[in-house]
Length: 213
Image 1 (cartoon, rainbow, N blue to C red):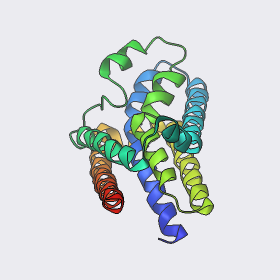
Image 2: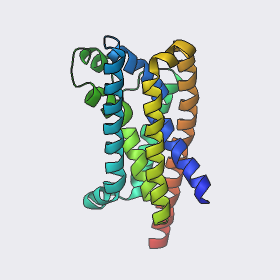
Image 3: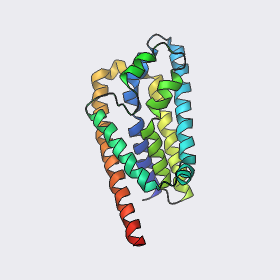
Image 4: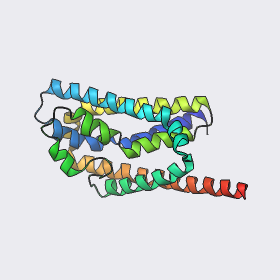
């Protein structure tokens, strides 16, 4: 896989699981009482923190796996199963329990730190996003590819920033129905990514066991 193809693959993988368009509905509901300026300040803080969290796990993920004695392929299989569950929720246009529950959205209405919870974590950087960036970094074959994963994270959250800053305009133009359609399409891509994670992980584990036999 050349660098451009790898960058495209990693960017799409991260963007699909972060799914900022789907997050717009929750973001608007949580910031509906705010002024335009306050909403934009909150969006910038939330996306920046989410990006830092994703970068942190991308850089330290392999160290954590080594610390707990977990193979990246084991995480790939477990992560694939988790992502498939999220993908099903997206395809049926449900709020995914992996990221945020309806009760958490309701309880967050009057909080002053909603940019931390639930927007940054877990809406943008939930377990699915964290698993994805760790697996992608663990799959790299060179320092150059690791840089491309980092670049994909930065690009994803740059797009998130643009989308959140334009959230009310986006909602006005495409509406709730348009967001549901987009979410279902992203869910289909995420299901394909989840299947790839699981099959690749099982195949790698099988080859490792065969080689050690």
